[in-house]
Image 1 (cartoon, one colour):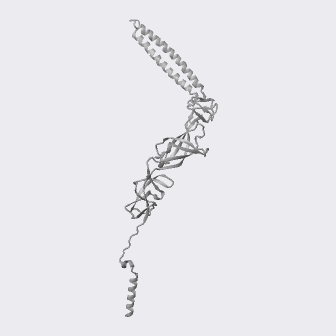
Image 2 (tube, helix red, strand yellow; image 1 turned 90 degrees about the vertical axis):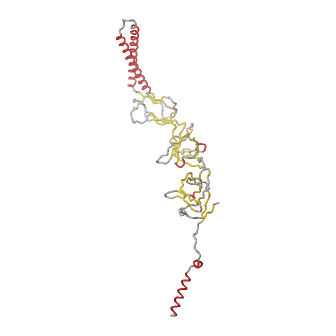
Image 3 (tube, helix red, strand yellow; image 1 turned 30 degrees about the horizontal axis):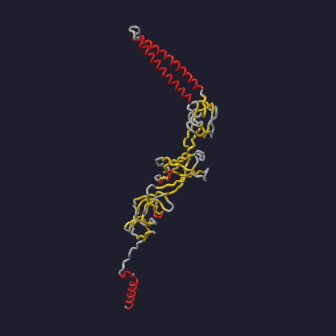
Length: 362
């Protein structure tokens, strides 16, 4: 009996020893609140210098094809020849065109003579008809009809002769603008003018060049400082040339998600060549102030990008899109306003709706 009392007393002592001191004192456990570094969101000017690839094109380029079939009688230019507008580049020999023009000219002279004769006859008959009983009305009408028919033939002959004369003008191929010959694909004596053949000559105006740059979609709404860019090419890597902004495509390419911007390059000394690739330096700025935050504030997941805003000591995820990336910060757009409290180092573990303490970053 004594042994049983000893066991009960010992067990009660163990239970008393295992009871937490806090429960003994009646103290409750409190939930721990994390403290995070934050900053106040502000707007500022956004300026950035970036490099994009570009390509140089001639200001004007034309592939020259003969309008009529024939043989190259004379080729007056070669690659590298500088030509002026209206200068004869090549002569085409087409004897059948010349003979048809001669035939049309002969018909024109014949129809002209017939018209002049019938017109004179009608004038005489008309004058005689004024004396009553001398010319019948039927004869007067017949003379008038003959004159009108000969007039129509004469007009048709003039149009035909003019058409063949115009075709004859195509025998001389002339330069459409000032430029340089960059390709020559035929020799004298070659038969030309057939469909689907190469152009006999290619001509370009390289005194000015077009610099085309594919600008990413995110940058298409920014402005250029002084509306100019600088660029270099592989041929002249140490030489920076200047180009003036002229026009935009006005549409985003669905495949590349870029918009073509075109610049104009003065090239009187021919220091830049069409077809060359260029490294283009763009000094960009946003016309209106934007929100700029440290890179660490932006959280990127597979689904979205967001920053963590704190209002009334409670976290909230705010979806954003990024604009220009600066050296240590990035431009953002979203449902935010100036003065909002944003977590300096955001992460997915800091869930929305969580209570936190804040400490402003100095």
